[in-house]
Length: 317
Image 1: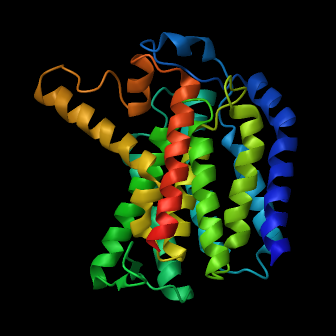
Image 2 (image 1 turned 60 degrees about the vertical axis):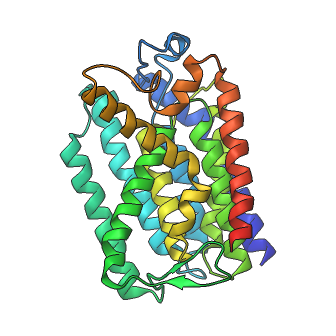
């Protein structure tokens, strides 16, 4: 058991860390650089920093999972949703930064692909696993909620909302990486505790993100891009469903949730007031930046908040 927990972390870390010095110069050579918003003066120096570094994360997760897949078949649906959304993100990044199509995938194209990937995951979950769509209720002493057929549309909502929440969180050096590493650690602890059989992939995500953080902490040498953020969102949603814990996502993924909500509030307020802003800038991590917080302080506070909420979620079980 200890081997199947420690080994995936170490293997995925090694893969991600070794790929850094190879992938980053390659991306720089391709000129797949990040474009920053002009309102964020402190971010303008990041313009041109290579993106699509999520390939390093995906490689660590995928190769490590393949090693353990035979003995741990329950990691298959999680791996599918992670890689599936990673491919969607890669297509978006490729169109934007390689082919120089400013919008990347059109909104309807991205949503259609996200729905398709989620639909395949749902079909597999319901027909080829013994995982029920009933959900563990936080702070209920082990009670489960079964909402019948309504669980399927809820699954689509949870998956797509989580994926886009992680995507919005990826806006500061090391933010999405740090927060998701903590969330993956939470799922790893739970997976081992309940003997769910998914711990190799949850631990692989921890290791891959630790390796990526070597190059992604401030000042970042590479960004994960949609390739990484969409993949990580798929992982969080899939792991939650394999553990029957989607109702815990608002707790451990609180940062993802407020990032999405801040964008929704900003857009709605902007339209209803004909140009006024509720936040200085959305997503909300930029609001704090423009309020005088340093980038590293925002990352530290958001990460500490996530760590504390993960402990609260363990208590909620």
